[in-house]
Length: 458
Ligand code: ARG
Image (cartoon, rainbow, N blue to C red; front, side):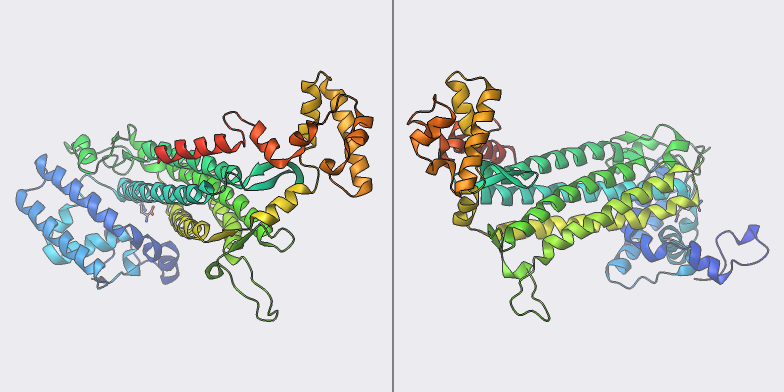
């Protein structure tokens, strides 16, 4: 198989060993093999339909590709570094298996449009899988949220107790983020799903090809309409990685919360043991390793985005070998995101909620102070004056080490005479939640409706 280099006709000395290793990509782009075969099948079928190769050639190519496919699936295919990349490895093997027909496969094609096609096919299928994984995670969130529309926890701003919210409402915030994440992926897919083949090296080809036919065979929505652009831009991969970085960023925020909630200081939740590890020295430890790693791996995916952007920024048209460097960041992004989404859905399913601890925390920090101010406004006080009166009441409660609800009516009235006995309803956590009764609010009825809408949508 290592007879002579593909382009040896042009060269007077063989490529140095070190250079071969430096320039080879087969060590990672072998992952494109099935997509490469898929692309080659469509290309060959088109060549035959357009009278560029014979029916016999097509039959031979098909037979050879089938055999190669089996060899790869069986782990029997021998990948050779000397053959640089996945494309040349498969083409050389095809020629060994079927002779001249194998040498005709590359007619009207270049590795430049071939690799761009392979990466798009790979990414399209990755996106389809990822959208399903996002759906599963969303479903896990809904399942958990369902039982907690009345579970009250403190909502935070600046990580200070702000206003009470339900645990379900908090979870549904992540549902919304994931909804947009899935939308973004589906939108990116439209731009991924265009066929580069036919662009050949950069300018198109002189054979009477039919690009639309290849596009239809490979289920692309259409062809890339400029050959230089088709072989050179990787914006679709950058865009995908940006989507992935956002998903990871969302999950990283969620992870940070899970870690906090699981710490004894909060004690809001417990994460199932199978997602945690112990310490080699401290026997009491149960560490939230999975969310911590998700937070850590977000840095890695963000890094891939920067790598791809940087890879592109200095490249003149059209194809440059730089583009070979697109694969590892892209593959790793897909793999990291796939594993993360999968483990996350599972982990959410294994969360044990501790409603008493959440409620206890909500009762500290004067979470219903805004409700008291709103109460005064509804009795006719301007909001700024209400804000001031409540601030004084909070200061008083803080000094006494009690909650607003523990202050007697006549004492409360010293801060604002408009306060009457009905204030205690307003100061309760349940009353606070129930009063935020509009779409997007934390009232149990609204969150139930949001969960129902979400269920209908996925
Ligand atoms: N392995 C190459 C890549 O990943 C394939 C295209 C090579 N084309 C070339 N003109 N050297 O981009």
